[in-house]
Amino acid sequence: MDITLRQLRYFVALADERSFRRAAEKVNITQPALSLQIKELEVRLGTKLVERLPRDIRLTRSGEITLVRAQNLLTDMRELERSVRLQSGLDGQLLLGVIPTIAPYLLPAALTNIRARITTLEVRVHEAQTEVLMQALHRGTIDAAIISPPFDKDGFDQIDLFEDRFLLAGSREKLEQWGLSPGRPKPVDIPPDRLLMLDQGHCLADQALDICGMTRQQIDLGASSLGTLSGLVAEGLGITFLPEIALRAEAGNNRLSLLRFATPEPNRKIVLVRRSGGDSDEWFTELADILRNAGSELLGFARQHIAP
Image 1 (tube, rainbow, N blue to C red):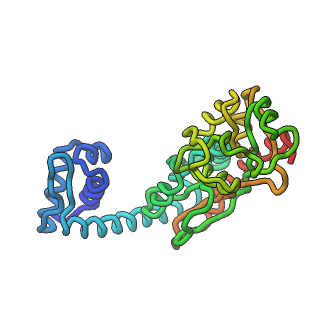
Image 2 (cartoon, helix red, strand yellow; image 1 turned 30 degrees about the vertical axis):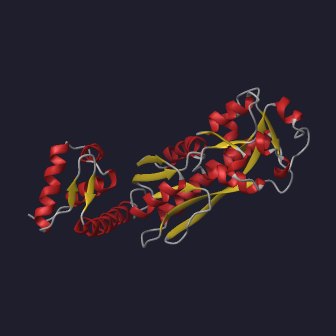
Image 3 (cartoon, rainbow, N blue to C red; image 1 turned 90 degrees about the vertical axis):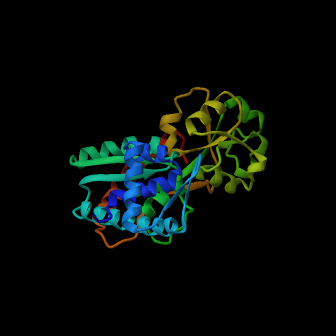
């Protein structure tokens, strides 16, 4: 019997999880079945790949070499499947990654537009931070990702979608107390000890810190989502940056007050990224057009309610 792609997938899952139990759960088979497939792979290759330790596994030298080759083969196979699947445009299935500070705001409008325009497309969404999504793009486990720069652009294609400006959010009382309202404050006017941001790893927090010229040591890393942050600052526990695309969803709290910054308004760029390759551009540009239109709706709402 030849080596199978299934065996390689199981072996990569085992190397990633470093546990037969967790790897079996990841690939949706029983632990004995996974163990049997790894043993068969070792027999076919004629070498031991895994050392079984009491609470861990360790790859042998042959296992390390096999892992690299297996990852490359699986990535090439996924790239082949993606190229064929999307060759005729947005049809069939789309595996889309989105960062958490974009997903809950842009996706509802975008998916509505997609369903109205392309009834045959099934969209599967993977929400994760930028670094995780870029790794998934590289491995071929997703087709495209909606993210915000910066990121390593080598080996990836990018289409700019729109510019998302930041608003200053807090309770009316606190904004006045800290001398930020009325008027249009500058990012440098924000007191560091009053600024609440997302937990480490979210690019929105990094972008806001860079705009204000602050470091993480100067601020509170307050929450894992913008929704939580909005609730905290509405109750007077601090102030935060709120992207325009989040305004329609998060501004329902009557205690939340929003200000525009002085010109030039701080902003982030939203882009669509895919792994560079030789497949058709049609699906990529069509998807970008749909996402750009959905973003325009959200920006229009924000700029109508809080004029630039």
